[in-house]
Length: 214
Image 1 (cartoon, helix red, strand yellow):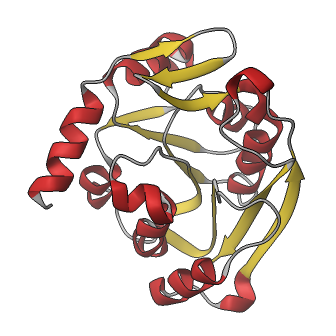
Image 2 (image 1 turned 90 degrees about the horizontal axis):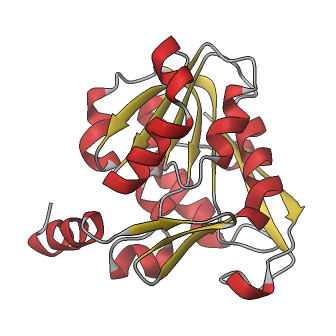
């Protein structure tokens, strides 16, 4: 890890997170709002479509975590790095964590996922907030594709917050193929959304939900 990346992560982890009835904000950064619910629930359905063990990277407001808990899966692993968000997860999903239907791993995915065995995951939902300028520029998911390929079982599915309104751009296909996925196994659907006027960080009426099969 570069010193710059380490500094960015340290700074992010020390910024205060604030939840209200409709949103999550970390310092001045809008991270998630409840208008995303239908989209996040669709991503959860894609990630859970193979059953088995599902890995969720990034907890946010817990919308997709709650949706995944409602699906017929064997195991649900959550990776989250921000201490305030971790605390919210513990409070909201205490019973799932106690029963073992949810497993919380704390830290940045780059540090945590190497602890997971290759070809051990049936579905992945990836949605993390960019903590560096490079991640902000091209999207955090682009950096995860290679690790997703390692973690997924053959036939396993990856989905992620695409930051694309109507189609998957060429860079998605390029990076996915570089990671090992085949273009013929990359699909997407366009999900309608209705961003709230008072918390608008998405300026479109739709977001693409990818389905990427190993």
